[in-house]
Length: 223
Image 1 (cartoon, rainbow, N blue to C red):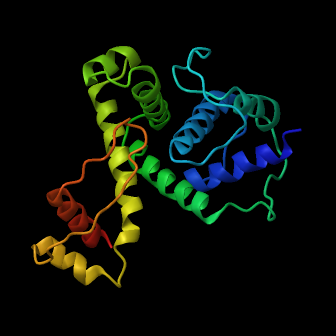
Image 2 (cartoon, rainbow, N blue to C red):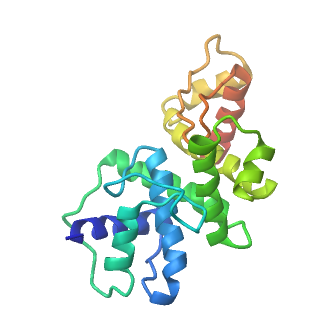
């Protein structure tokens, strides 16, 4: 029943985390957090995995979860030793790009934490609460609701910023790098407009000329 869906989850996981998933039963909790967090954060950037949406009230993990995805984890992935590679299963170019960018950004953030799995759970929890539960709340109110730390909030901000930077890189290839340099130096009268969807924080981006220059300089230095 779930054969195609479990293959999609498996191959998305490999692209997102850059590793093979551990389907051993003793890894059930970690696998749940990894897959549910991956699926929710990707959904915020337009890549949908699973047939239903995410809920918050029916889980003791304090994170958004899809019951459809959880059924697949419990019924088809845990303890699975089948080969789930499928050469016929192809992602669209846009979906693959988003999976790679968001996965790279997540790994950058959680690998610098003492507990990557808990950091991953906190990130998806905070993103969900900020958008769907208390969208107008202050940082103190978000910390009170999610029981997270100030460091966790900064991790979420860092994640969103890192994804934004990675998505903006397409605007800075070799053909226009000279003009970007001029923009940084203030020699161009009209700077590039970078239209970025800052999914996850419930706000539209406010990009000033100064922020454009700073981001452009950062991207040039990283290329």
